[in-house]
Image 1 (tube, rainbow, N blue to C red):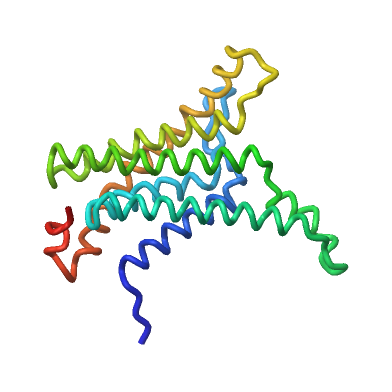
Image 2: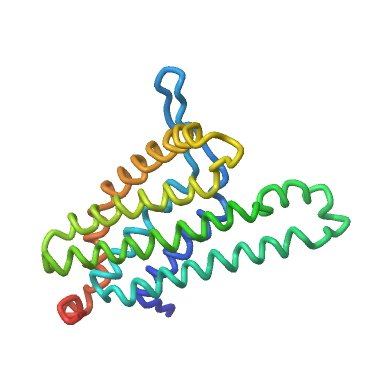
Length: 224
């Protein structure tokens, strides 16, 4: 009989969301149009909010030190994926794979700037999420999990979106005002979308905490 510890399942889901965001997040799809304004979103919009919700579940059950460890582990996973992608695209293809080489390189051969933006945004926003959630819990105790979850997620996802888009798409050859206008036109819709998904996920944070502590209901009270 196969047995997997609950925390391992949660961390596995966390790493899955990271891998999907990094490897498949370059695809965008249309969401809606308002007049001439068309909003497209990355497919990673479905997985990034889950990362922040999992952070909050882990803090609630195991404390902020454990959550920070998971965030740093996620950072290591992203770093290794990017390093291996660089290695993979640099190797010459076999004869059988030559026709697919261009598409393979297009998908996995990211620029160093995009990679650096992704790494920086992930670690800073992840640690910010842990810090805000923990600070609110120190003030309010175990009450209002929904408040801690949503405030920490909304703020940290604003940081994640702003840092990544600014580092990845700021044009040094354009005036500052033009950059600000362009970047905010991307940052605000993405932030609203990710925040909305986080709000929708709030019940799942409660379910996640209950599920993780179901065999040991005293665990949540014993965590410092």
